[in-house]
Image (cartoon, rainbow, N blue to C red; front, side, top):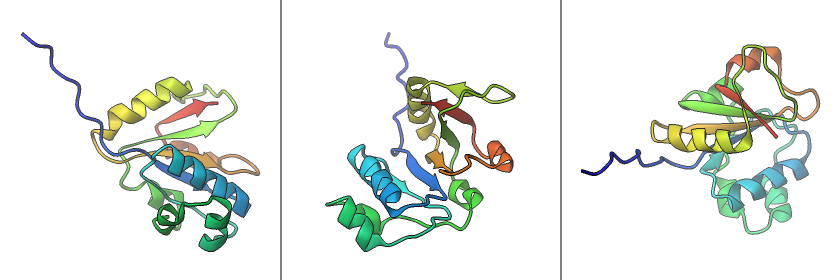
Length: 142
């Protein structure tokens, strides 16, 4: 008798940078997402967006850059996602699920079998707004 197999993982996560302030930071996120095979990017409230300059900084990513979505809000960016994790440098505990990087990655893979999953990064200047804390399912400390 064979053990039941785990469900096949779904598509790779979507990277969701929120309010990036600098084109170089967007290009860095594009390079990271492209190199690690993420499904796509949904860019929320960027200070600037110039696909030509982004690809000029993150060479050979024109096809990936052409697929960047620009939803108007974080809610719109995560509307179809079944699970999302926000990246943070600070440990937080109050009523939040906090995961390490490996745990968050495993959860993203497992949940991707149910539908789209997302990794949320940003705000660069002041972190997340209090109201946004309810929009994701877990925090991943880096």
